[in-house]
Length: 255
Image 1 (cartoon, rainbow, N blue to C red):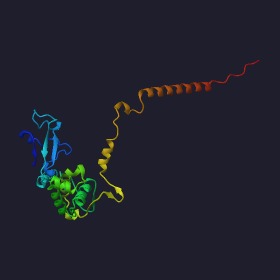
Image 2 (image 1 turned 90 degrees about the vertical axis):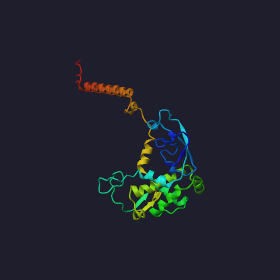
Image 3 (image 1 turned 120 degrees about the vertical axis):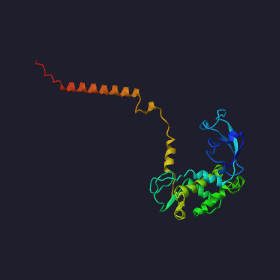
Image 4 (image 1 turned 135 degrees about the vertical axis):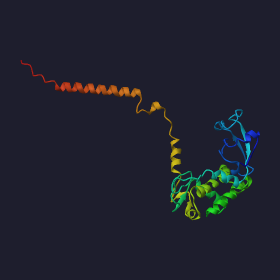
């Protein structure tokens, strides 16, 4: 793994299970060179760390530009060594032949749009996309800042994001040049903005306040008591009214 870190040699051996602030689980080769990242171990890495380490310990990492170091990290995500069906995408998941027109939106669009408009790189073919990814990943931090001054906090992530998109399409979904020519990266479908529907739904569920179990009833216990008493009073009044109507009318007394 490309990268240099401050600390002991034992600490350098534990980069894999570390959680990296703002850019979690990223290889230093996927960041532009000369970018320094402050990282912190999380409690998830306790099994891979020595007993002397603490979850709050932190170190600084110096990133190195390396498209060659970045590509194998992403390639391992798309395992196509076994397929129980006639054809698969990756990890043994069935996928029909890649045919027809496709629309790539959300993160696909923003990543390719950065390559196309900000970096000024052609991405009309799958080969051009791969070349654009290599170009971005081989940039230094200073070069990226000069070419994309308005990218903000997302700038360090474009190498990893672009490499993921390229590897997913080529190795994961098996797009070739012909299928890629029918793939459109766009932000809207017609006049409607499109996004990841499932992700949007999951994000909205986070806005629903969690109710304690006691409030899951229709009404609380006190209201149930009042309703039962009111029902009993109405029932008694109805019975009394029926008895009164059923009683025979008294005949007038003789004078």
